[in-house]
Structure formats: structure tokens, C-alpha cells
Amino acid sequence: MEPTVVYAYTQDVPIDEALYRKIIDALGAEPLAGQLVHLCVRRPDGGLRYIDVWESREACATAFDDRIHPAVDRAFGGSRPGEPTVEHLEVLHATGALLERA
Image 1 (spheres, rainbow, N blue to C red):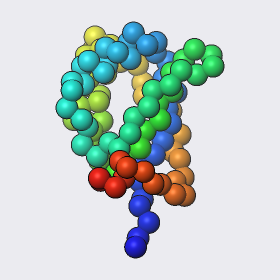
Image 2: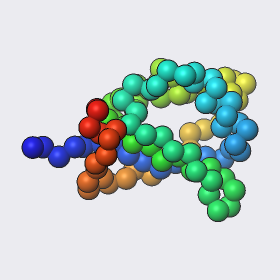
Image 3: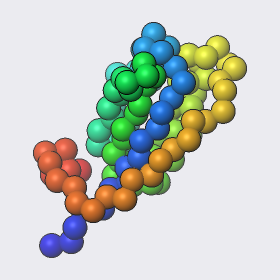
């Protein structure tokens, strides 16, 4: 049995919860193809951090091109600042119900 390989990262974003909710609303209810989990957590300094796990880097890139960047652009009113730094995670092991369905 081959190990499950996923693409995972964290990203600290310079936005507040209200703007985050606008982005989520702009994304719509349809799940993003290839996204296994997305967590948005509050950092101790009050900012937000995303923790994302995707089936593949390619699925992530497609989702950003097709849905995420357009939604962020709409939420920012067309003047989105640059992309926050992504910290890629080296996944040594992944398990869980979401991976079983992938």
C-alpha cells in the first residue's frame, strides 16, 4: 500500500474575520475540488492563519486560479494586495476520514 501524499501549507493573512467572511461568501457553497481541509484560526496577535491540506499541489493551483483569487478580488473590491507568504509543510504521515474518501 502506497503512503498518501498530500500538499499542505500554512499562511498568515493580514485580514480580519469580517473580510474573511466576505471571501468565504464570494467562494460560494460548492466545495473546492481537491481541497481536503481548510482551517482558519485566530493567531495570538489577533491575525488569521490558514491551514490547508489538498490532494495535490496541482489541485490547489487550479482552485486558486479558478475560484480563490477571483473571490478574494471581489472581497477586496478589485484591489487585492499581494499574496501572503505560504509556508509549505513537509507531510510525513497523513490519515483520517477525509483522506479515505479522496
